[in-house]
Amino acid sequence: MKNKFTFLLSFLISFSGLIAQNISGVSKVQSFNVQKVIVPPILVIKDGSVKFSDQDENGRLDAYENASLSFVLQNLGKGPAVALRAVVNVSGEVNGLNIEKSKVLSKIYPGKSQYVTIPISATKYLSTGNVNLEITVKEPNGLDCDPIHVDFNTLKFQEPKIELVDGVFTTDDGQNIFKKKIPAKLNIVVQNIGQSKTDRITVNINSPSNILALDGSLFNVGSLSPGESYSVSFGFIANSNYNQENVIFNVIAKEGYGKYGSTRDFSVVIDQKLDASKLVVQGEQFKETQINKKYLTSDVDRNLPVNYKAYSNRYGLVIGNEDYSSKQTNLSTEQDVAFARNDANSFKNYLTTTLGFENEHVTILNDATIGEMSKEIKKLVELGKLNSKNEIVFYYAGHGLPDDDKNPYLLPVDVSTINLTEDGLPLKELYSKLASSNAAKITVFLDACFSGGGRDQGLLAARGVKIKPKEETFTGNMVVFASSSGEERSLPYEEKQHGFFTYFLLKKLQETKGNTTYGELSEYIKKEVSRSSLLKKSLKQTPHTNTSPTAQNSWKTWTFR
Image 1 (tube, rainbow, N blue to C red):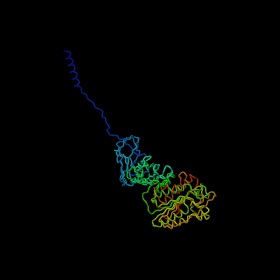
Image 2 (cartoon, rainbow, N blue to C red):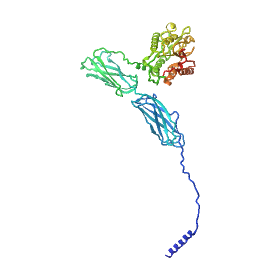
Image 3 (cartoon, helix red, strand yellow):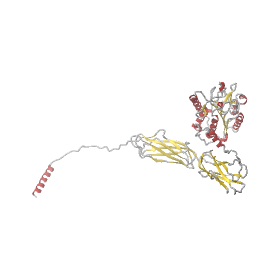
Image 4 (cartoon, one colour):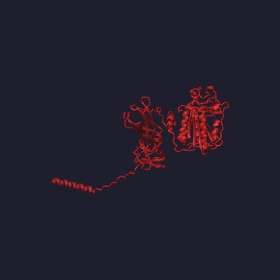
């Protein structure tokens, strides 16, 4: 107890001493920076990354089609880009268009990029027109990227039409007389004669009782593009219980939309001799497609720009004289004109597809005789006379030759150098006839030379003769685009399966969608043919353009659109 008291007394004495002391001090002043530091992103669209993609890859949005607009967004800054949105503004009076107007994007770290896709789709009610898109990537601090501007065309729904074009009956025994208990066939051609591709096409053949289908009666055709056809071979046999004089098959063609098919009855009489002739597909469009297919290797023969505006006052005559050797026994195939038919077919397609000529207003002649050429030139002139606002176009690819007096002639395939002056077609006469039409515009394209050099070999090349032909003058409101000058040859462009002149003529029409002036067209053809003929052939070919006095002050501003 005494020890506890002594300890407490010592503690109190010590504590009272501490209180008696005077303790003082000053703390050091410090400062703190609490301001927020922002490291900004820098958003840019990668050069060349903007792309419009549609299902059929024709660069146009069609009804029922899906497409997308894509680009690569880069962050070139030192800070991350967060809370980004791609905002789409649409202008242009187009109905039936679906576009995602706002799309949330993910975070982009410094030095990184993001692939952005904006989905686009078209409904059945899409209208034909032009769509203008402005896409901006929005950043919360206002550091938006520069807007992207994209224009593309739209096309309203073009109806397909699946038609049962023709049908022919044959028998397996080769007698071509339809009898009971003898196998027979009904060969049918189904064709899309409409303006757009359609799929899920089927052909169903309904037979009467006691007619047995040997290979089934339902045929899956698949899809058909415009002008494309498909052959169906339906095998059948009439049994001994069939008691009618004839057999009627009801054939139904259906397609994916469920409303553009057709139905047709085909009938065959028992014991009647059948038409065993070769089945021929009807329809001019289909025949033209078949003719052109073997030539579709050049870039100018694919993806022709489409102009849906038709000009009823325009008429054309297109001639491609290629095969001279078959008509003249003294000529070899080396003296034919390489690719002349292809030139003519392709130019005709541009007239009707890109330049607004109605199909029935354009006549095409391949390997034409003097009689055929004279007849169609006369018709073209008469069409030009029908209305003072009418326009006519004459195109020729083939041989040209000068006579002994250097007068230039077009050479039909049945005319030789011997009877040139009697049966050939003088340019002077051609120009005179065209001018007599008094058409508002007369345009002539000549992919031929008149020096005797021909296209590559030529008809006079064996003689080593080169002649500078006379330059013909002409009247009327006329412009002549000629493929070469003076003693030059008009050369073939084997890589493109066209003449140099025609290839670059078509190339300009393709690149501009036909929206070019005659002056621009003339300069382009002259420049490109002169350059390419030297590079590819080491030969000089210089196209030139001649005009009548009436047109000389205005022709450069003429257009086809």
